[in-house]
Image (cartoon, rainbow, N blue to C red; front, side, top):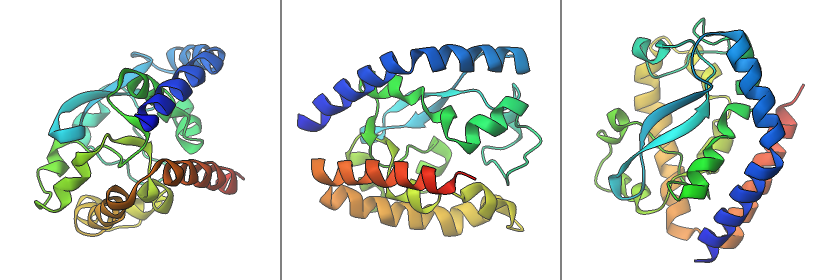
Length: 199
């Protein structure tokens, strides 16, 4: 209950405070390329239930039909505005809407698409016991994931065989010992990692 109250309070406050930025981002995205401001992708949430995750659109319309994985820092499908908003994680901000309506939490295992969830072992499926989140320990560890995939000979296979299992290992540990204090620690670590990566 404390976690949900905190999520509701902080997401509502965040949406209110960031509303001018949302308007500016929306204008930039619309002027930069054709398509909607938001990209809504079906992800798998708590107890295996599908929901639509909000993001600012950073790729050209229809790009997801060419693959779900973004490869490297210069994927040609990414728009000019998309490069900037992805670099500073601004594309993730609309997920505050998902947190506010209860699909997600501020902290929790990042939600995957059904394609990858179907590969989980019974043990790995325990990451679905909690609400997915905007940030988690795996997100901090793999904040350079696009670069790792860009250097791989087969990005899809590398993700499935190497990155995904390690993410699940980290998130299973989170699920086993998560607490309100631990969540606050992860939030601070996330901000520290973003600031550290700034040029």
